[in-house]
Amino acid sequence: MVYYILYFCFQYMNRIETNFKMIRFSFFVVIFLVSVTSSYTIKVVDVDAICKQTNDVSFCTNLLNSKPGGVGQDLVSLAQYTLDVVRSNTTNTIILIQRLIAQTGRDVEAQIPYKKCLTYFKDIIHTIHYFGDMLKIREYDEMFHSADRITSYIDYCLNGGGPDEPPYHGAKKCQCS
Image 1: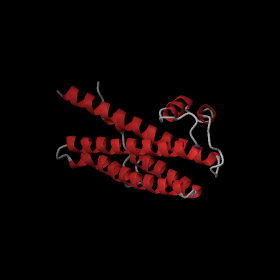
Image 2: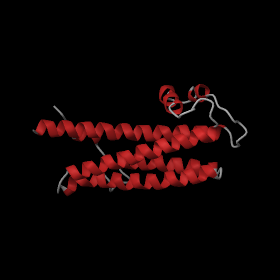
Image 3: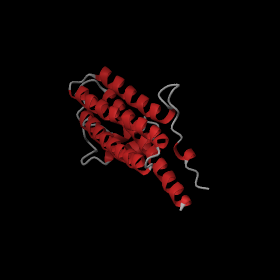
Image 4: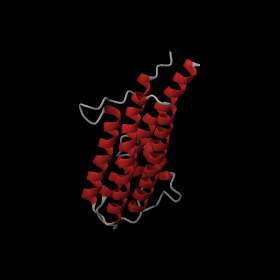
């Protein structure tokens, strides 16, 4: 029974860390898309050309081509689609964190890192909405600052937000051996 619980915990931790990576990378894709040009003059974009300039070409290509009509879309449309994916992934991560909190039962100490991450991810949702508003009015500097805040929130969740916050240990805390 203990092995099953530890295994279950390990699986959830891996899913959370995967969601963190997807959210962080997706925001880099959004920033790249909107920084390619500061105008709407480019009507059609080459997804492969954009993705070749990223660190994870496969992820970028799969993400942008998953948009219905993805190939041949304009930058703003692709940026908005990517933002929608980030919002969905963040919402799913919040749901996952809430499940983990519920699974800790009355163990207040076990809830602390999850509750801190939950707070950060709720801040991410607010920042995503702000980011979308800035996209609509072409405030690219604010978008960069928003993306930076989002990556900081993810980092705070994983590594602690300061000296009084312990880092998130993820799967290391749930050994399955």
